[in-house]
Image 1 (cartoon, each protein chain N blue to C red):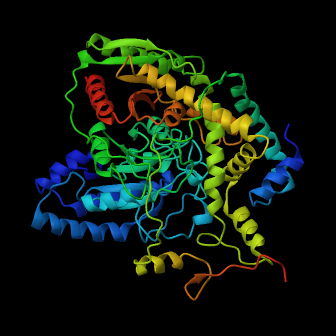
Image 2 (cartoon, chains in turn yellow, green):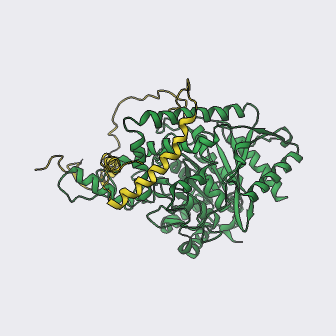
Image 3 (cartoon, each protein chain N blue to C red):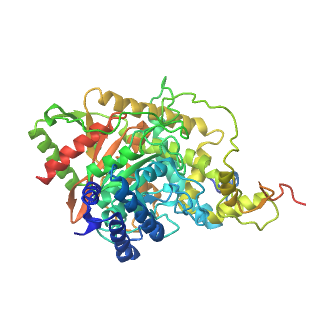
Amino acid sequence: MISKKEIQHLADLSRLKLTEKEIKKYQKQLSDILDYVGQLKKINTKDVLPCTGGTNLKNIFRNDEASLADKEMIKRLLKTAPKVENNLIKVKGIFNK
Amino acid sequence: MILNNLTILEAHQGLKKKEFSSEDLVRSCLDEIKKQDKKINAFITVLEKEAIERAKTIDKQIASNGLNNFLTGIPLAIKDNILIQDVRATAGSKILSEYCSPYDATVIKKLKDAGAIFVGKTNLDEFAMGSSTENSFFGPTKNPRDLERVPGGSSGGSAAAVTAKMCLGALGSDTGGSIRQPASFCGVVGLKPTYGKVSRFGLMAMASSLDQIGPIGNSVDDVAVLLDAIEGKDNFDSTSVETPKIENLKLKIENLRIGIPKEYFIKGLDSQIKKNIDHLIKKLKDEGAEIKEVSLPHTKEALACYYIIMPAEVSANLSRYDGIRYGYSIQEGKNLLDVYLNSRTQGFGDESKRRIILGTYILSKGYYEAYYLKAQKVRTLIKNDFQEAFKKVDCLLTPTTPTTAFKIGEKIDDPLNMYLSDIYTVPVNLAGLPALSMPVGKIDKLPFGLQIIGNYFEENKILEIAKTIEKLISK
Protein backbone atom coordinates (compact mmCIF):
# COMPACT_ATOMS: atom_id res chain seq x y z
CA MET A 1 0.00 0.00 0.00
CA ILE A 2 1.19 3.46 -0.96
CA SER A 3 2.04 5.49 2.17
CA LYS A 4 0.38 8.66 3.45
CA LYS A 5 3.69 10.45 3.18
CA GLU A 6 3.98 9.48 -0.49
CA ILE A 7 0.49 10.77 -1.29
CA GLN A 8 1.32 14.04 0.46
CA HIS A 9 4.55 14.33 -1.56
CA LEU A 10 2.68 13.67 -4.84
CA ALA A 11 0.11 16.31 -3.89
CA ASP A 12 2.92 18.81 -3.26
CA LEU A 13 4.45 18.05 -6.66
CA SER A 14 1.01 18.36 -8.29
CA ARG A 15 0.31 21.70 -6.60
CA LEU A 16 -2.75 20.36 -4.81
CA LYS A 17 -3.77 20.57 -1.16
CA LEU A 18 -5.43 17.45 0.18
CA THR A 19 -7.48 17.00 3.34
CA GLU A 20 -6.73 14.14 5.72
CA LYS A 21 -9.86 12.40 4.40
CA GLU A 22 -8.76 12.79 0.76
CA ILE A 23 -5.29 11.45 1.54
CA LYS A 24 -6.84 8.32 3.08
CA LYS A 25 -9.22 7.87 0.16
CA TYR A 26 -6.53 8.29 -2.52
CA GLN A 27 -4.20 5.99 -0.56
CA LYS A 28 -6.71 3.16 -0.93
CA GLN A 29 -7.88 3.97 -4.48
CA LEU A 30 -4.39 4.53 -5.91
CA SER A 31 -3.16 1.31 -4.30
CA ASP A 32 -6.05 -0.60 -5.94
CA ILE A 33 -5.33 0.96 -9.33
CA LEU A 34 -1.57 0.36 -9.05
CA ASP A 35 -2.21 -3.29 -8.10
CA TYR A 36 -4.39 -3.63 -11.18
CA VAL A 37 -1.95 -1.98 -13.63
CA GLY A 38 0.86 -4.00 -12.06
CA GLN A 39 -0.33 -6.98 -14.13
CA LEU A 40 1.81 -5.61 -16.98
CA LYS A 41 4.93 -6.78 -15.13
CA LYS A 42 4.14 -10.35 -16.20
CA ILE A 43 4.31 -9.54 -19.91
CA ASN A 44 7.54 -10.26 -21.72
CA THR A 45 8.66 -7.05 -23.43
CA LYS A 46 12.25 -8.03 -24.12
CA ASP A 47 13.46 -6.35 -27.35
CA VAL A 48 10.12 -4.52 -27.78
CA LEU A 49 10.46 -0.85 -28.68
CA PRO A 50 8.26 1.57 -26.72
CA CYS A 51 5.36 3.20 -28.58
CA THR A 52 5.92 6.84 -27.72
CA GLY A 53 2.84 8.42 -29.27
CA GLY A 54 -0.22 8.08 -31.42
CA THR A 55 1.50 8.80 -34.72
CA ASN A 56 4.44 7.61 -36.78
CA LEU A 57 5.13 11.14 -38.03
CA LYS A 58 8.51 12.58 -37.13
CA ASN A 59 9.92 16.07 -36.72
CA ILE A 60 7.31 18.46 -38.03
CA PHE A 61 9.19 21.77 -38.10
CA ARG A 62 8.18 25.39 -38.40
CA ASN A 63 10.14 28.59 -38.04
CA ASP A 64 10.64 29.63 -34.44
CA GLU A 65 8.93 32.98 -34.78
CA ALA A 66 6.41 34.64 -32.53
CA SER A 67 3.56 36.09 -34.53
CA LEU A 68 2.51 39.43 -33.11
CA ALA A 69 0.57 40.42 -36.21
CA ASP A 70 -2.86 39.54 -34.86
CA LYS A 71 -3.28 42.37 -32.35
CA GLU A 72 -6.95 41.51 -31.83
CA MET A 73 -6.01 37.97 -30.81
CA ILE A 74 -3.42 39.23 -28.31
CA LYS A 75 -6.08 41.45 -26.79
CA ARG A 76 -8.54 38.57 -26.57
CA LEU A 77 -5.97 36.26 -24.98
CA LEU A 78 -5.02 38.86 -22.37
CA LYS A 79 -8.68 39.39 -21.55
CA THR A 80 -8.87 35.89 -20.06
CA ALA A 81 -6.09 36.58 -17.52
CA PRO A 82 -7.10 37.53 -13.97
CA LYS A 83 -4.58 40.41 -13.70
CA VAL A 84 -3.06 42.44 -16.53
CA GLU A 85 -0.80 45.51 -16.40
CA ASN A 86 0.73 47.30 -19.44
CA ASN A 87 -0.26 44.45 -21.75
CA LEU A 88 1.51 41.93 -19.48
CA ILE A 89 0.05 39.28 -17.19
CA LYS A 90 0.74 40.21 -13.59
CA VAL A 91 1.55 37.50 -11.04
CA LYS A 92 2.35 37.43 -7.35
CA GLY A 93 5.94 37.33 -6.09
CA ILE A 94 7.76 34.05 -5.78
CA PHE A 95 9.44 34.95 -2.47
CA ASN A 96 7.73 36.12 0.68
CA LYS A 97 8.36 39.74 1.61
CA MET B 1 -43.53 17.09 -39.58
CA ILE B 2 -41.51 17.16 -36.37
CA LEU B 3 -38.41 18.91 -37.66
CA ASN B 4 -35.99 18.00 -34.87
CA ASN B 5 -36.71 14.30 -35.51
CA LEU B 6 -35.18 14.49 -38.98
CA THR B 7 -31.76 13.13 -39.84
CA ILE B 8 -29.21 15.61 -41.22
CA LEU B 9 -29.73 14.29 -44.75
CA GLU B 10 -33.55 14.51 -44.48
CA ALA B 11 -33.33 18.04 -43.10
CA HIS B 12 -30.99 18.98 -45.95
CA GLN B 13 -33.54 17.75 -48.48
CA GLY B 14 -36.29 19.72 -46.72
CA LEU B 15 -34.20 22.91 -46.76
CA LYS B 16 -33.43 22.34 -50.42
CA LYS B 17 -37.10 21.93 -51.32
CA LYS B 18 -37.94 24.97 -49.15
CA GLU B 19 -40.38 22.91 -47.04
CA PHE B 20 -39.05 24.75 -43.99
CA SER B 21 -36.30 27.22 -43.13
CA SER B 22 -33.16 26.78 -41.09
CA GLU B 23 -34.76 29.03 -38.49
CA ASP B 24 -37.70 26.58 -38.21
CA LEU B 25 -35.23 23.76 -37.76
CA VAL B 26 -33.21 25.60 -35.11
CA ARG B 27 -36.33 26.69 -33.23
CA SER B 28 -37.66 23.12 -33.10
CA CYS B 29 -34.38 21.97 -31.51
CA LEU B 30 -34.40 24.88 -29.05
CA ASP B 31 -38.03 24.07 -28.12
CA GLU B 32 -37.03 20.46 -27.49
CA ILE B 33 -34.18 21.65 -25.25
CA LYS B 34 -36.64 23.81 -23.28
CA LYS B 35 -39.03 20.90 -22.98
CA GLN B 36 -36.57 18.18 -22.01
CA ASP B 37 -33.25 19.49 -20.80
CA LYS B 38 -34.33 20.36 -17.26
CA LYS B 39 -34.52 16.63 -16.61
CA ILE B 40 -31.77 15.37 -18.94
CA ASN B 41 -29.12 18.10 -18.36
CA ALA B 42 -27.31 17.48 -21.66
CA PHE B 43 -26.35 21.13 -22.10
CA ILE B 44 -24.05 23.35 -20.05
CA THR B 45 -24.66 26.38 -22.29
CA VAL B 46 -27.60 26.88 -24.67
CA LEU B 47 -26.92 29.39 -27.45
CA GLU B 48 -30.54 30.36 -28.10
CA LYS B 49 -30.13 33.96 -29.28
CA GLU B 50 -26.94 33.28 -31.24
CA ALA B 51 -28.41 30.22 -32.99
CA ILE B 52 -31.60 31.98 -34.10
CA GLU B 53 -29.66 35.01 -35.33
CA ARG B 54 -27.27 32.81 -37.26
CA ALA B 55 -30.15 30.77 -38.74
CA LYS B 56 -31.70 33.98 -40.08
CA THR B 57 -28.40 34.89 -41.75
CA ILE B 58 -28.03 31.39 -43.19
CA ASP B 59 -31.62 31.45 -44.51
CA LYS B 60 -30.80 34.66 -46.39
CA GLN B 61 -27.67 33.04 -47.80
CA ILE B 62 -29.65 29.99 -48.90
CA ALA B 63 -32.20 32.26 -50.58
CA SER B 64 -29.53 34.07 -52.58
CA ASN B 65 -26.83 31.41 -53.14
CA GLY B 66 -28.73 28.13 -52.81
CA LEU B 67 -27.56 25.11 -50.82
CA ASN B 68 -24.28 23.43 -51.64
CA ASN B 69 -23.36 21.76 -48.37
CA PHE B 70 -25.15 19.07 -46.39
CA LEU B 71 -24.51 20.95 -43.14
CA THR B 72 -25.75 24.39 -44.19
CA GLY B 73 -28.44 25.46 -41.75
CA ILE B 74 -28.19 22.28 -39.65
CA PRO B 75 -28.37 22.65 -35.82
CA LEU B 76 -25.53 20.87 -34.01
CA ALA B 77 -24.32 20.51 -30.42
CA ILE B 78 -20.64 20.68 -29.40
CA LYS B 79 -18.95 19.00 -26.46
CA ASP B 80 -17.84 21.65 -24.01
CA ASN B 81 -14.13 20.85 -24.27
CA ILE B 82 -14.07 22.16 -27.87
CA LEU B 83 -13.63 25.92 -28.30
CA ILE B 84 -16.10 28.24 -30.04
CA GLN B 85 -14.94 31.86 -30.12
CA ASP B 86 -16.69 34.16 -27.64
CA VAL B 87 -18.62 31.25 -26.13
CA ARG B 88 -18.02 29.87 -22.63
CA ALA B 89 -15.98 26.63 -22.66
CA THR B 90 -16.01 24.90 -19.27
CA ALA B 91 -14.81 21.33 -19.91
CA GLY B 92 -17.29 20.44 -17.15
CA SER B 93 -14.88 21.92 -14.61
CA LYS B 94 -15.17 24.60 -11.97
CA ILE B 95 -11.68 25.76 -12.94
CA LEU B 96 -13.02 26.91 -16.36
CA SER B 97 -16.61 27.66 -15.32
CA GLU B 98 -16.27 31.33 -16.34
CA TYR B 99 -13.78 30.86 -19.19
CA CYS B 100 -14.77 32.39 -22.52
CA SER B 101 -12.88 31.10 -25.55
CA PRO B 102 -10.78 33.66 -27.46
CA TYR B 103 -10.70 31.59 -30.68
CA ASP B 104 -12.35 28.80 -32.71
CA ALA B 105 -11.13 25.20 -32.76
CA THR B 106 -10.26 24.07 -36.29
CA VAL B 107 -13.28 21.72 -36.39
CA ILE B 108 -15.52 24.65 -35.38
CA LYS B 109 -14.04 26.87 -38.08
CA LYS B 110 -14.72 24.14 -40.63
CA LEU B 111 -18.31 23.62 -39.43
CA LYS B 112 -18.92 27.39 -39.51
CA ASP B 113 -17.58 27.51 -43.08
CA ALA B 114 -19.99 24.70 -43.97
CA GLY B 115 -22.89 26.79 -42.62
CA ALA B 116 -23.69 24.67 -39.54
CA ILE B 117 -25.40 26.27 -36.53
CA PHE B 118 -24.48 25.59 -32.89
CA VAL B 119 -27.42 25.31 -30.48
CA GLY B 120 -25.29 24.68 -27.43
CA LYS B 121 -22.30 23.24 -25.58
CA THR B 122 -22.81 19.81 -24.05
CA ASN B 123 -22.03 18.33 -20.66
CA LEU B 124 -19.09 15.99 -20.06
CA ASP B 125 -17.04 14.42 -17.29
CA GLU B 126 -14.55 17.01 -16.09
CA PHE B 127 -11.90 17.42 -18.81
CA ALA B 128 -13.42 14.35 -20.54
CA MET B 129 -12.29 12.08 -17.70
CA GLY B 130 -14.96 9.53 -16.92
CA SER B 131 -17.34 6.96 -18.33
CA SER B 132 -20.68 8.26 -17.05
CA THR B 133 -20.83 12.10 -17.25
CA GLU B 134 -21.27 12.08 -13.46
CA ASN B 135 -17.93 13.85 -12.88
CA SER B 136 -19.18 17.22 -14.12
CA PHE B 137 -19.19 20.42 -12.05
CA PHE B 138 -22.56 21.09 -13.71
CA GLY B 139 -24.23 17.93 -12.44
CA PRO B 140 -24.76 14.56 -14.13
CA THR B 141 -26.46 14.08 -17.51
CA LYS B 142 -29.29 11.51 -17.52
CA ASN B 143 -29.80 8.88 -20.19
CA PRO B 144 -32.86 9.91 -22.27
CA ARG B 145 -33.83 6.20 -22.60
CA ASP B 146 -34.05 5.81 -18.81
CA LEU B 147 -33.57 8.85 -16.58
CA GLU B 148 -32.24 6.76 -13.68
CA ARG B 149 -29.30 5.64 -15.76
CA VAL B 150 -26.09 7.27 -17.00
CA PRO B 151 -25.74 8.21 -20.68
CA GLY B 152 -22.15 6.96 -20.64
CA GLY B 153 -19.21 9.28 -20.93
CA SER B 154 -17.36 11.36 -21.26
CA SER B 155 -19.32 12.71 -24.28
CA GLY B 156 -22.57 11.89 -22.45
CA GLY B 157 -24.09 15.32 -23.07
CA SER B 158 -23.52 15.11 -26.83
CA ALA B 159 -24.90 11.54 -27.06
CA ALA B 160 -27.94 12.45 -24.92
CA ALA B 161 -28.63 15.62 -26.96
CA VAL B 162 -28.61 13.61 -30.23
CA THR B 163 -30.74 10.84 -28.68
CA ALA B 164 -33.35 13.25 -27.31
CA LYS B 165 -33.44 15.11 -30.68
CA MET B 166 -32.30 18.38 -29.12
CA CYS B 167 -29.94 18.77 -32.10
CA LEU B 168 -29.45 16.89 -35.37
CA GLY B 169 -25.85 15.87 -34.73
CA ALA B 170 -22.98 16.55 -32.35
CA LEU B 171 -19.24 16.47 -31.83
CA GLY B 172 -17.59 14.57 -29.03
CA SER B 173 -14.04 13.58 -28.18
CA ASP B 174 -12.72 10.07 -27.60
CA THR B 175 -9.60 9.25 -25.57
CA GLY B 176 -10.52 5.74 -24.37
CA GLY B 177 -14.09 5.31 -25.62
CA SER B 178 -15.69 8.66 -24.81
CA ILE B 179 -17.65 8.81 -28.10
CA ARG B 180 -18.40 5.11 -28.63
CA GLN B 181 -19.40 4.11 -25.09
CA PRO B 182 -22.05 6.86 -24.70
CA ALA B 183 -23.26 6.19 -28.27
CA SER B 184 -23.74 2.55 -27.22
CA PHE B 185 -25.52 3.43 -23.94
CA CYS B 186 -27.84 5.94 -25.67
CA GLY B 187 -28.49 4.04 -28.90
CA VAL B 188 -26.96 6.43 -31.44
CA VAL B 189 -24.04 6.24 -33.90
CA GLY B 190 -20.61 7.50 -32.84
CA LEU B 191 -17.27 7.44 -34.65
CA LYS B 192 -13.75 7.76 -33.29
CA PRO B 193 -11.55 8.59 -36.30
CA THR B 194 -7.97 7.42 -36.82
CA TYR B 195 -5.43 9.39 -34.76
CA GLY B 196 -4.41 12.22 -37.12
CA LYS B 197 -7.62 12.25 -39.21
CA VAL B 198 -9.14 15.27 -37.44
CA SER B 199 -7.27 18.32 -36.13
CA ARG B 200 -7.35 18.74 -32.36
CA PHE B 201 -6.44 22.41 -32.38
CA GLY B 202 -8.90 23.98 -29.94
CA LEU B 203 -9.74 20.71 -28.19
CA MET B 204 -8.66 20.82 -24.55
CA ALA B 205 -5.86 18.28 -24.26
CA MET B 206 -6.47 15.33 -21.94
CA ALA B 207 -4.11 12.53 -23.06
CA SER B 208 -2.44 13.86 -26.20
CA SER B 209 -1.31 10.55 -27.72
CA LEU B 210 -4.89 9.21 -27.55
CA ASP B 211 -7.35 12.13 -28.01
CA GLN B 212 -9.46 12.44 -31.18
CA ILE B 213 -12.53 14.53 -32.04
CA GLY B 214 -15.38 12.66 -33.74
CA PRO B 215 -19.06 12.87 -34.72
CA ILE B 216 -22.23 11.51 -33.08
CA GLY B 217 -25.46 11.19 -35.09
CA ASN B 218 -28.77 9.44 -35.53
CA SER B 219 -27.64 7.55 -38.65
CA VAL B 220 -24.45 6.27 -40.24
CA ASP B 221 -24.91 8.70 -43.15
CA ASP B 222 -25.12 11.66 -40.76
CA VAL B 223 -21.89 10.63 -39.06
CA ALA B 224 -20.21 10.32 -42.49
CA VAL B 225 -21.33 13.84 -43.45
CA LEU B 226 -20.01 15.29 -40.19
CA LEU B 227 -16.66 13.49 -40.49
CA ASP B 228 -16.28 14.71 -44.06
CA ALA B 229 -16.73 18.29 -42.83
CA ILE B 230 -14.22 18.20 -39.96
CA GLU B 231 -11.38 15.97 -41.24
CA GLY B 232 -8.12 16.99 -42.86
CA LYS B 233 -4.60 18.21 -42.24
CA ASP B 234 -4.18 21.36 -40.20
CA ASN B 235 -0.96 23.30 -39.62
CA PHE B 236 -2.07 24.00 -36.04
CA ASP B 237 -2.02 20.27 -35.17
CA SER B 238 1.21 18.67 -36.36
CA THR B 239 -0.15 15.14 -35.76
CA SER B 240 -2.89 15.68 -38.36
CA VAL B 241 -2.46 14.25 -41.87
CA GLU B 242 -4.07 14.43 -45.30
CA THR B 243 -6.16 11.29 -45.89
CA PRO B 244 -8.64 9.89 -48.44
CA LYS B 245 -11.91 11.84 -48.57
CA ILE B 246 -15.12 10.27 -47.30
CA GLU B 247 -16.87 8.62 -50.22
CA ASN B 248 -19.05 5.70 -51.12
CA LEU B 249 -16.86 2.67 -51.83
CA LYS B 250 -19.70 0.45 -53.07
CA LEU B 251 -18.43 -2.51 -51.08
CA LYS B 252 -20.02 -5.86 -51.74
CA ILE B 253 -20.91 -7.83 -48.65
CA GLU B 254 -19.79 -11.09 -50.26
CA ASN B 255 -16.27 -9.69 -50.65
CA LEU B 256 -15.98 -8.75 -46.98
CA ARG B 257 -13.68 -10.53 -44.58
CA ILE B 258 -14.89 -9.87 -41.05
CA GLY B 259 -12.76 -10.68 -38.02
CA ILE B 260 -14.22 -11.67 -34.66
CA PRO B 261 -11.61 -11.20 -31.91
CA LYS B 262 -12.19 -14.08 -29.53
CA GLU B 263 -10.80 -12.16 -26.54
CA TYR B 264 -13.79 -9.78 -26.68
CA PHE B 265 -16.42 -12.48 -26.17
CA ILE B 266 -15.44 -13.72 -22.74
CA LYS B 267 -16.66 -13.63 -19.12
CA GLY B 268 -17.98 -10.21 -18.14
CA LEU B 269 -19.88 -9.70 -21.40
CA ASP B 270 -23.66 -9.61 -20.86
CA SER B 271 -25.06 -12.89 -22.20
CA GLN B 272 -27.94 -11.13 -24.01
CA ILE B 273 -25.53 -8.76 -25.80
CA LYS B 274 -23.41 -11.74 -26.79
CA LYS B 275 -26.44 -13.64 -28.11
CA ASN B 276 -27.61 -10.64 -30.15
CA ILE B 277 -24.20 -9.99 -31.69
CA ASP B 278 -23.68 -13.69 -32.46
CA HIS B 279 -27.02 -13.61 -34.27
CA LEU B 280 -25.98 -10.54 -36.27
CA ILE B 281 -22.69 -12.19 -37.24
CA LYS B 282 -24.64 -15.21 -38.49
CA LYS B 283 -26.84 -12.92 -40.58
CA LEU B 284 -23.75 -11.35 -42.17
CA LYS B 285 -22.44 -14.82 -42.91
CA ASP B 286 -25.75 -15.78 -44.54
CA GLU B 287 -25.42 -12.68 -46.75
CA GLY B 288 -22.08 -13.96 -47.98
CA ALA B 289 -19.48 -12.27 -45.79
CA GLU B 290 -16.49 -14.35 -44.76
CA ILE B 291 -16.33 -14.60 -40.96
CA LYS B 292 -12.96 -15.36 -39.38
CA GLU B 293 -12.09 -15.79 -35.75
CA VAL B 294 -8.97 -13.76 -34.95
CA SER B 295 -6.87 -13.34 -31.83
CA LEU B 296 -5.69 -10.10 -30.18
CA PRO B 297 -3.65 -11.73 -27.42
CA HIS B 298 -2.89 -8.55 -25.43
CA THR B 299 -6.52 -7.43 -25.09
CA LYS B 300 -6.60 -8.34 -21.41
CA GLU B 301 -3.70 -6.01 -20.61
CA ALA B 302 -4.94 -3.05 -22.68
CA LEU B 303 -6.92 -1.43 -19.87
CA ALA B 304 -3.96 -1.63 -17.46
CA CYS B 305 -1.72 -0.15 -20.17
CA TYR B 306 -4.25 2.67 -20.72
CA TYR B 307 -4.47 3.47 -17.00
CA ILE B 308 -0.73 4.13 -16.97
CA ILE B 309 -0.30 6.10 -20.19
CA MET B 310 -3.47 8.19 -19.87
CA PRO B 311 -2.98 9.56 -16.30
CA ALA B 312 0.70 10.24 -17.05
CA GLU B 313 -0.31 12.47 -19.96
CA VAL B 314 -3.21 13.96 -17.98
CA SER B 315 -0.95 15.03 -15.13
CA ALA B 316 1.26 16.90 -17.61
CA ASN B 317 -1.62 18.42 -19.61
CA LEU B 318 -3.61 19.64 -16.60
CA SER B 319 -0.60 21.45 -15.14
CA ARG B 320 -1.54 24.41 -17.39
CA TYR B 321 -4.56 25.18 -15.20
CA ASP B 322 -2.71 27.23 -12.62
CA GLY B 323 -4.80 30.37 -12.10
CA ILE B 324 -2.32 32.59 -13.96
CA ARG B 325 -3.31 33.06 -17.59
CA TYR B 326 -6.98 32.09 -17.55
CA GLY B 327 -9.62 30.25 -15.60
CA TYR B 328 -10.54 30.15 -11.93
CA SER B 329 -7.97 32.10 -9.93
CA ILE B 330 -7.66 32.69 -6.19
CA GLN B 331 -5.55 35.82 -5.74
CA GLU B 332 -5.54 35.83 -1.93
CA GLY B 333 -2.48 34.38 -0.21
CA LYS B 334 1.05 35.59 0.18
CA ASN B 335 2.89 34.33 -2.91
CA LEU B 336 2.66 32.69 -6.31
CA LEU B 337 2.63 29.17 -4.84
CA ASP B 338 -0.52 30.05 -2.92
CA VAL B 339 -2.21 31.07 -6.17
CA TYR B 340 -1.32 27.71 -7.73
CA LEU B 341 -2.34 25.66 -4.70
CA ASN B 342 -5.61 27.42 -3.96
CA SER B 343 -6.77 27.80 -7.57
CA ARG B 344 -6.08 24.15 -8.42
CA THR B 345 -7.34 22.69 -5.14
CA GLN B 346 -10.64 24.55 -5.34
CA GLY B 347 -10.93 24.36 -9.13
CA PHE B 348 -10.43 20.65 -9.87
CA GLY B 349 -12.93 17.91 -9.04
CA ASP B 350 -12.26 14.53 -7.47
CA GLU B 351 -11.53 12.47 -10.61
CA SER B 352 -9.14 15.10 -12.00
CA LYS B 353 -7.20 15.18 -8.73
CA ARG B 354 -7.05 11.39 -8.62
CA ARG B 355 -5.64 11.16 -12.15
CA ILE B 356 -3.19 14.04 -11.66
CA ILE B 357 -1.77 12.38 -8.54
CA LEU B 358 -1.69 8.93 -10.18
CA GLY B 359 0.07 10.35 -13.25
CA THR B 360 2.58 12.21 -11.13
CA TYR B 361 3.38 8.96 -9.32
CA ILE B 362 3.80 7.02 -12.58
CA LEU B 363 6.19 9.61 -14.00
CA SER B 364 8.29 10.04 -10.86
CA LYS B 365 11.84 8.85 -10.46
CA GLY B 366 12.06 5.16 -9.65
CA TYR B 367 8.62 4.34 -11.09
CA TYR B 368 8.94 5.70 -14.60
CA GLU B 369 10.57 2.58 -16.00
CA ALA B 370 8.46 0.09 -14.06
CA TYR B 371 5.20 1.72 -15.12
CA TYR B 372 5.42 4.23 -17.94
CA LEU B 373 8.13 2.68 -20.10
CA LYS B 374 6.66 -0.78 -19.54
CA ALA B 375 3.23 0.44 -20.64
CA GLN B 376 4.70 2.03 -23.78
CA LYS B 377 6.23 -1.32 -24.70
CA VAL B 378 2.95 -3.16 -24.07
CA ARG B 379 1.28 -0.51 -26.25
CA THR B 380 3.56 -1.60 -29.11
CA LEU B 381 2.42 -5.21 -28.59
CA ILE B 382 -1.25 -4.16 -28.64
CA LYS B 383 -0.67 -2.24 -31.87
CA ASN B 384 1.12 -5.24 -33.40
CA ASP B 385 -1.83 -7.50 -32.52
CA PHE B 386 -4.17 -5.30 -34.57
CA GLN B 387 -1.72 -5.02 -37.46
CA GLU B 388 -1.47 -8.82 -37.63
CA ALA B 389 -5.28 -9.13 -37.60
CA PHE B 390 -5.73 -6.59 -40.41
CA LYS B 391 -3.50 -8.70 -42.67
CA LYS B 392 -6.33 -11.25 -42.66
CA VAL B 393 -9.54 -9.21 -42.40
CA ASP B 394 -11.14 -5.91 -43.51
CA CYS B 395 -12.65 -5.04 -40.17
CA LEU B 396 -13.23 -6.36 -36.66
CA LEU B 397 -16.65 -6.65 -35.04
CA THR B 398 -17.00 -6.52 -31.25
CA PRO B 399 -19.51 -5.34 -28.67
CA THR B 400 -18.90 -1.65 -27.78
CA THR B 401 -19.57 -2.20 -24.08
CA PRO B 402 -19.83 -5.31 -21.90
CA THR B 403 -23.21 -4.18 -20.48
CA THR B 404 -26.04 -1.72 -21.15
CA ALA B 405 -26.17 1.64 -19.29
CA PHE B 406 -25.70 1.35 -15.53
CA LYS B 407 -27.54 3.29 -12.82
CA ILE B 408 -26.49 6.78 -11.75
CA GLY B 409 -24.33 6.49 -8.62
CA GLU B 410 -23.70 2.77 -9.14
CA LYS B 411 -19.96 3.02 -9.84
CA ILE B 412 -18.99 6.52 -8.77
CA ASP B 413 -17.25 5.43 -5.56
CA ASP B 414 -15.40 2.57 -7.20
CA PRO B 415 -13.13 4.08 -9.88
CA LEU B 416 -11.55 0.79 -10.92
CA ASN B 417 -14.96 -0.77 -11.57
CA MET B 418 -15.97 2.35 -13.54
CA TYR B 419 -12.80 2.05 -15.66
CA LEU B 420 -13.77 -1.51 -16.65
CA SER B 421 -16.75 -0.25 -18.67
CA ASP B 422 -14.22 0.93 -21.31
CA ILE B 423 -12.59 -2.46 -21.73
CA TYR B 424 -13.62 -2.91 -25.41
CA THR B 425 -12.96 0.65 -26.54
CA VAL B 426 -9.58 1.45 -24.96
CA PRO B 427 -7.39 -0.86 -27.14
CA VAL B 428 -8.50 1.06 -30.26
CA ASN B 429 -7.14 4.35 -28.87
CA LEU B 430 -3.86 2.76 -27.82
CA ALA B 431 -3.43 1.48 -31.40
CA GLY B 432 -4.64 4.80 -32.91
CA LEU B 433 -7.24 3.02 -35.08
CA PRO B 434 -10.68 4.22 -36.23
CA ALA B 435 -13.83 2.61 -34.80
CA LEU B 436 -17.56 3.19 -34.95
CA SER B 437 -20.34 2.22 -32.55
CA MET B 438 -23.85 1.71 -33.91
CA PRO B 439 -27.04 0.60 -32.14
CA VAL B 440 -27.93 -3.00 -33.02
CA GLY B 441 -30.44 -4.01 -30.36
CA LYS B 442 -32.02 -3.45 -26.96
CA ILE B 443 -32.26 -5.37 -23.71
CA ASP B 444 -35.19 -4.30 -21.47
CA LYS B 445 -35.53 -1.07 -23.50
CA LEU B 446 -31.82 -0.26 -23.06
CA PRO B 447 -29.76 -0.05 -26.26
CA PHE B 448 -26.33 -1.53 -26.85
CA GLY B 449 -23.80 -0.97 -29.60
CA LEU B 450 -21.80 -2.96 -32.09
CA GLN B 451 -18.23 -1.74 -32.52
CA ILE B 452 -16.67 -1.85 -36.00
CA ILE B 453 -12.90 -1.40 -35.88
CA GLY B 454 -11.08 -0.63 -39.14
CA ASN B 455 -7.48 -0.37 -40.29
CA TYR B 456 -5.68 2.99 -40.23
CA PHE B 457 -7.52 5.72 -42.19
CA GLU B 458 -10.11 3.24 -43.48
CA GLU B 459 -13.08 5.24 -42.17
CA ASN B 460 -14.65 4.86 -45.63
CA LYS B 461 -14.74 1.11 -45.24
CA ILE B 462 -16.10 1.22 -41.67
CA LEU B 463 -18.90 3.57 -42.72
CA GLU B 464 -19.83 1.36 -45.68
CA ILE B 465 -19.92 -1.76 -43.52
CA ALA B 466 -22.01 0.11 -40.93
CA LYS B 467 -24.48 1.15 -43.64
CA THR B 468 -24.75 -2.47 -44.80
CA ILE B 469 -25.47 -3.59 -41.23
CA GLU B 470 -27.94 -0.71 -40.75
CA LYS B 471 -29.92 -2.00 -43.75
CA LEU B 472 -29.62 -5.61 -42.61
CA ILE B 473 -31.08 -4.99 -39.14
CA SER B 474 -33.91 -2.80 -40.44
CA LYS B 475 -35.06 -5.69 -42.65
